[in-house]
Length: 303
Image (cartoon, rainbow, N blue to C red; front, side):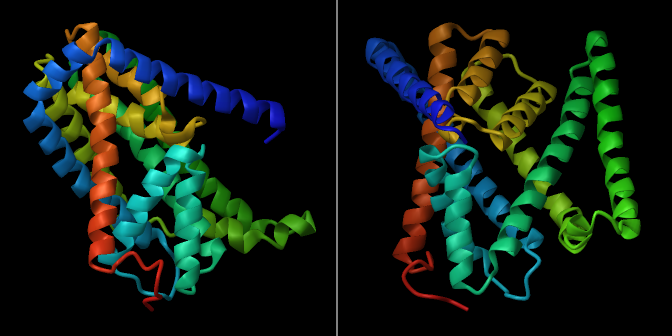
């Protein structure tokens, strides 16, 4: 990444943080009142996110094609620290670096770690396309049928493109430099087991339940179809988060959704900040509990 782009990205990130802090200070009496009323909503959001963190950590280990056996109970702490590290680096690079470093201490190669990340992200995007299709059909709006049909065709196209890619790899002999990496490219699109797919689907189900719980707690007129669409949009946007923590993008999605479901500006802002605070609190809780029980793995190696 060139230096001017990094500068603009960092400036945009700092501006967003500054604007968020300024708005919170300006609207503090209103926001504080809303949050006091939504204490149970916050606790429920944290509980659902803890389950989501466990599922994501488990999914990663399913996609990890390595002879080393690792326990989800230990790895979930690393996943939580990685989620927090994403707040200081773009493109989820902070979390990826932490996972690669931890797995390296457990004799897992960098290639295996990155391939597991790629599989998880690719399958998540594929499931998001299916989720958006289902969500559009669930809202029972005739105008949503054509977008749902287009997304379904795109979902099918990605499936067949994978099959064509595997057949092309089998017969590829030239160019030589690419043929030498044929096995690596083959591994990148395989290892997507049924268990891994069900795990990613469970992740989206939890994300949908989370948003339905929070929006319903704020009194928004939301259905499961709308919650599923929002969850898919948030997950898909986080896969290519240019700003650390996808700051600003997820808040925009939450606030626009809240406005569409009948919330006023203060309520929508309070909702978006509540979800962000719940995400940070969840990962801090999981990380600190793991450290308390000596399961982080950063101090000693557990083979």
